[in-house]
Length: 353
Image 1 (tube, rainbow, N blue to C red):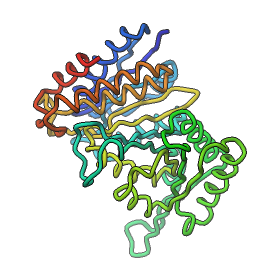
Image 2 (image 1 turned 30 degrees about the vertical axis):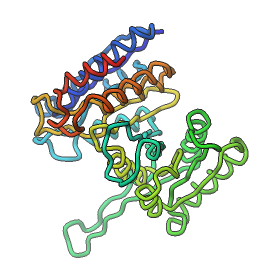
Image 3 (image 1 turned 90 degrees about the vertical axis):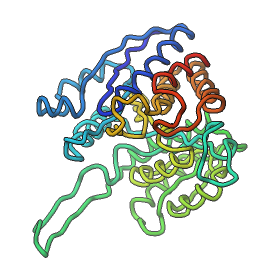
């Protein structure tokens, strides 16, 4: 088996952590007998400042020729916020139809959590976020801008097709990877206030579940209650499926529960196309070039990529190696607090493999 992988290190500390993800990828590929063709892309803040171009139209065509993309981080202190995020990240997600955002919330052994009396056995669930619709479609506008009569609108758009494909994917994921007995999928929405858009989510959730996934327990929670329960009883959740905006919010809460951005990884998934995987922590420009940033989120994102490509054994090996490193090697998870440099942490994961 051979895979063509796009490598897009991006900005700030992105190249440093991506290098460690690729280092581990090379080792686990050799260990499991598959080969890699790596294609490098320099898109990000430096290229934008040099050329004025965020993402040429040809890039999307180049991306479509890949099996997956490993992204470092996007965000440059000399580029106005929103330019890179919308022009690169959101454009790639939308044009490649990466309609699933997958965020495991998993506390690894040895990693501290701010929750008292909770451990790895309690914090181990997955959030499936719809990634192409909702408030992030960019539909809306201004009237009478910069006057006292200004009106700003942002439209919440959901289609039945978009909602159903996300919900079906979440049921399939729960069927394969759910850990509770019985396996449980929780819909997180706000049906008591968003009575049109989230009524659609609720109806499709129960229709699909009842017809095609009767063995999976269906559960519902309002998003505000979910935030409370994630802090009070994180062990309650197995797999969560939710809307674009709510998913954006609760996944960052989840990242804090699992020990911070240094360990949080995510995937933007097109189940029948090209998916993109990334650490969640951002470009962290103040640490650029110092060799102190934690690369484990990038390594975990690479492991998610392997799982999505069907290399479950290799993905499990990466996860177990990360557990060894967090439980026996690192002094802390924050930048400069690990007891090792960025590249040394990558070496530790390789040794554990």
